[in-house]
Image (cartoon, rainbow, N blue to C red; front, side, top):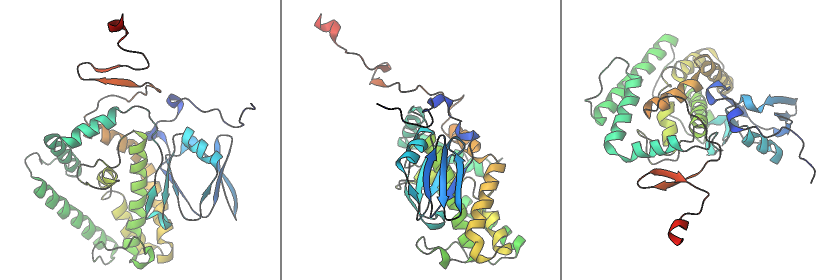
Amino acid sequence: MAEIPGMIRPELQALPQIGDRMTFLYLERCVLNRQDSAITVTDDQGTVFVPAAAISVLLLGPGTKVTHRAMELIGDAGVSALWVGEHGVRYYAGGRPLTHKSDLLIRQAQLVSNTRLRLGVVRQMYRMRFPGEDVSQLTLQQLRGREGARIRAVYRRASKEWKVPWNGRAYDPDDFAGGDPVNQALSAGHACLYGAAHAVIQALGCSPGLGFVHTGHERSFVYDIADLYKADITIPLAFELAATVDKEQIGSAMRRRTRDAMVRCHLMERIVQDIRTLFACEGEETDGGDAIYLWDDKKGMVESGRSYGMEEER
């Protein structure tokens, strides 16, 4: 059988760590293929080559066509491919994790399934938003009230700084153009944050659906993580662009500026570290390749791929 041309599939350990990659790439109305280790993006303007190993997440918008060869490369390189709506404001489907290990997923399930432990993670999330404050004795209702007041204050400051009226968060996911400039910018920026958070969560092998503050949605944990950074990244940017950019350009400008801000603050690296902090995991994750174990109620894990019970038979 003839060898398939192109890049040799890399070992999982050889892939760049999620914190070292670019943030995301939004594409629409184009065709994705591959040439060796690069994704080719072709539209009526020509073809661009994108190194697959440098991307964390591809946001594939309307009019995007992807060849089987391109998806093979995207999967081998550990890129999260997310199918989204126009301007990236709707999420439809996602990709695969970068790791084969389930340690963080098991830890996440343990934490979210125990009321006391879950409350501890929620308090830690709010502590990240209120540095220097003691929130250890606050109830969930008090924490939500404190967070609501904090976000309203962030909106008021940005509105005053850029002299842009603010009447509250109001948007229709099915009508991006129907919102005012600030809400359009917020929708576009938040979608980028969700894509980046979703990419890291999937790359670490965690579950996007097992949230701590948010619950009941397939992306609950994505919203939990993205909310940690909105006040620092997307909200100030949205008001700045609403004051300085034409409404017709607000979506694309917000995506570019959000991307640049995420690169400057090393957001992907921060998300990895924040998730590990929330789950109280120390040290670096190492991948065990394709190793699979069997669960044991006394030993925890035992070797798989062998036939048990032969001693008793003998």
